[in-house]
Length: 208
Image 1: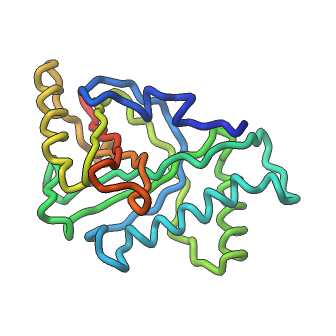
Image 2 (image 1 turned 90 degrees about the vertical axis):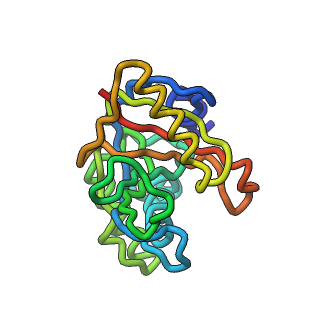
């Protein structure tokens, strides 16, 4: 059976509806940076998703080709994730989506190193005739965070984030945003196949 991060590492992908603290380990991602309203038809965000999945599935399906990746094991491609921020703001203002900056990303197994990443980008670029120069290999160490499961539309996240922030304050902690520690979301539901009110999103914020 392919390794499924969501099932094998449930604490990272299935928090409860009540806030909780978690220590997030260092992980490798493929990532694309961008900005602007993610809901616009031709947004940088929507284009980033296509690019990320092109590279992710090139790595996953390498088992059917002639290229051997050291340490490879079959895996379920992990869910799409996003790190979000707005210039000059500590939190997120959902009424100003045009001000969003983001790092859109997909987690990769530990066997994916920079050499494997470079091979996958070159291979996907050639086969799919895509410009994937914007995709990068990213290693992140989030450390101590607070997280919660949000069920509902993305525009309804503000209330859930407020609960999470209140939890952080009540535990004598505070949000710890920086250039490397951002508001983090993990999208467990496919909005094309799930009713908006049933979409599940992990919301995570860095704390100290």
